[in-house]
Image 1 (tube, helix red, strand yellow):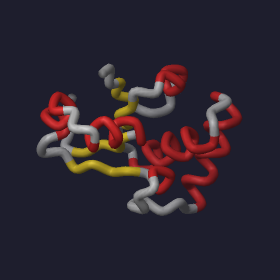
Image 2 (cartoon, one colour; image 1 turned 120 degrees about the vertical axis):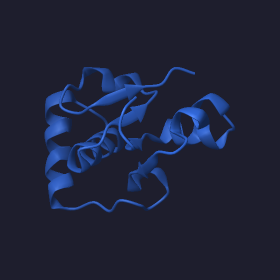
Image 3 (cartoon, one colour; image 1 turned 45 degrees about the vertical axis):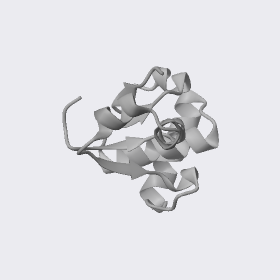
Image 4 (cartoon, one colour; image 1 turned 90 degrees about the vertical axis):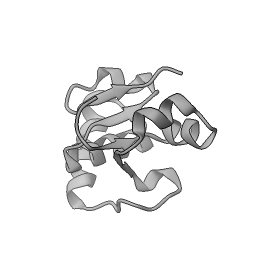
Length: 100
């Protein structure tokens, strides 16, 4: 994984908070972003994220929380780390899959 920053999905945050040491090593030294949908208000929603959310829901038939997280990654032009396989069908954003 290259780059110094990425967005993580809620499931990745939960693995990390649960003590996943492998994941902690992967994320060490990275700037981590978390969408507001994850009970931790870091990145607020704006008009562009709303528009991208609508587009992702329409094209990929994502659930609203997943669409918001994906739209946030697209807006910030950052990869999204997730263990959620629903994101496999999205080619509009850079997805990094994590398998526990």
